[in-house]
Amino acid sequence: MNILCLYPKGCYDNDNCPKSGCGLESILSMTEKDLENCSLEDKRLINQFREKYLSAWNSNINSRARGAATGRALEDWIRELLRNVGAKCEKGRLEFQFGKFNVDIIIPNKLNPSALLEVKVTTDRQHALMFSGLINQTLNKTIKFGLVTLYRPSDDIINILEQWKKDNAGRFDYFILEERWNKSYNRLQGFLEEDI
Image (cartoon, rainbow, N blue to C red; front, side, top):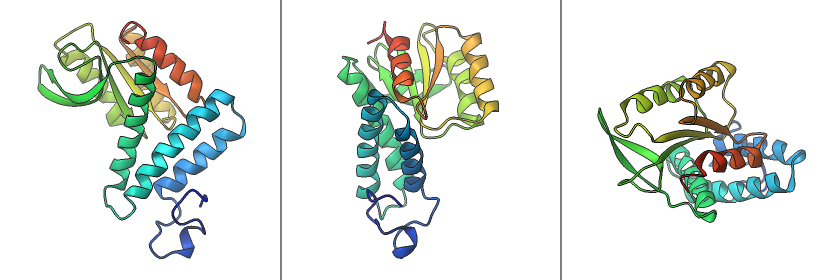
């Protein structure tokens, strides 16, 4: 385990520590690997994220909802990055044809949304397929949809996302942080440029 953890001697040296394979170990290993060969901008983003993530993890160390807290930390960090470049954004429920849906990031606000972002630590088939329903069920057919994911999804998930991107050119895109932090962040800003 990394020294940034509350249990710096390692997972097996403390009875209260989550065992190897915990979310913290996984995130720290991935970001440590990404830090080995990256640009200064990537390092800045990775270190900012790690600080936010570790704070959420360590403040919820005895909570059963530690995973949810750290997922929120990723959402909060993305929201903070967007606000730093002047974006007005919030979290909330938005009306669709099927009813209200909780959205991680709405730009600029719930009353006049122009872009919606879902932020996921990992992306599975269900997350990927969700976008088809959201895009088809939106009341405002000009809203853009984006997916920000920390880990690179499997190739079959990437294929689904690529198909949504092709079918909804200019309205849907996805951004993978792992191994390309700054590049993905810059692409996200470009995707939202008219909206922020």
